[in-house]
Image (cartoon, rainbow over all chains, first blue to last red; front, side):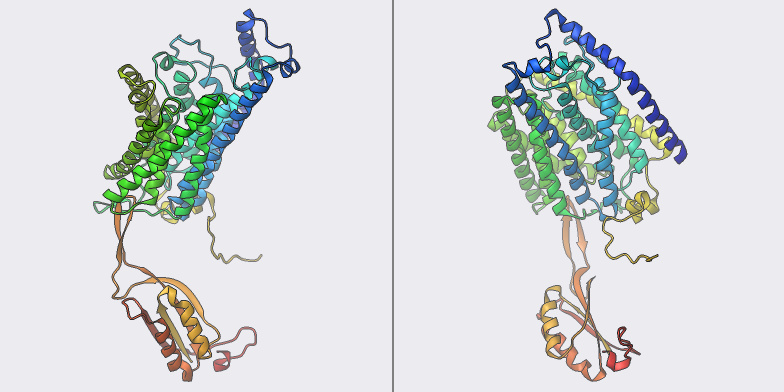
Length: 467
Length: 112
């Protein structure tokens, strides 16, 4: 079985290499078609030098610079996720958690370059009600002026566009890793991640951000409460259901706590994620527009703060003690909640959205334990539940509030939810049948660091033979 | 020779170490342990689930001394480690058959 997987991966890589060479042609065609479409107007600039000399160059540089910075901020969220997940799980699995969080963004970026980007942005004509399209394998530039000047977009070049979106894809992929932590087989998880981020995430993303049918239906998701966070959440839910709880979690009719090994590490992770959100929401303006970006950063931070306060009060009242891990989840919940409408909200709405997220996340964590869905880090509560709440909030608060918008939001939630959950469920199920999904009970007891990776995160003192 | 094992409250370690230095003890081995006697545990809560913690953090101090020193060393430890509150710990004294200083190969009481 191991050899089958290794061989399949090798074949996949070779195939990818061949198609990439062929992809250059495909993208020339795509670029030429694009150029042809806009050729009714003559190209704005003769070449890049002409653009550099043009009056629009400075402002384009400013916009593009902001977008590239935002790509870097979203990138660091991977470290944030790694720290949160590791801090809230046991030290015997720390290498495994960090490995997953290291490899997932790498797989995400690479597959997004080969497939995802062109699957998510296939070039639908706005209003065409499209469901699926593919602009070819690989990313490349055939026409410098068309791709690298404000002819491509007022806010960023083709490359910036790709990288910013690739970082988003990586973020969506890594949400699943926390929920399935401490018992999922690494190889199975990698297979799922590749399928999820290559196929599922871009298709649902194309429905709205790729100007597909959901965009035509009036659905609004500024930075991805649905398209990123609840997509990750649905994938996580499917995984948690099929995987089952960690050994010893729901025993003797009780919920037995499995303590995280480092609260400071979890805290570091959450603040890295908050920092990343400056880019996640700030960059979703898709330019450095001062009015929109400054508003977005404020709504984002207000919601995060309110989320923390909401979780603090709720845990203090309901659980008798203010719970750090709940407050950390509360910050993230507020951030996820505001993400759908960060550019639409005023101060009060942002605070309410955040506060409700913080309250809901606490009850949600308790709920999932009650129904025996074991989620070590609260990913379902933060990303799925608050992702749905944040999406609905666009119809309840802010500039777009209204019954019609609420219906559109529901359409998006249901459509993306159904597609993603079914895709993930089938994927996990098939993986389970073909190669197994869960580590053995012995390995789970000993720790995945030994079983999957053959080493420890914290070796302490480890007598080793000198020779 | 006698081995003296003392289970004490963690914050008492410095005091016990100083008290031992005062009676001429120059070496000891210390481990972090968990345990309980009559001191009850307490309830903790993690992400909404309550659990009882019976085992409390303690420090174990181990020293090997000449027979003549055992009584005074034990007394010094008890005095330094006492708070009067439940959970202060215990001292155990047992017989040691032999001891060797690894660097010099000295044996018996010369090694301690």
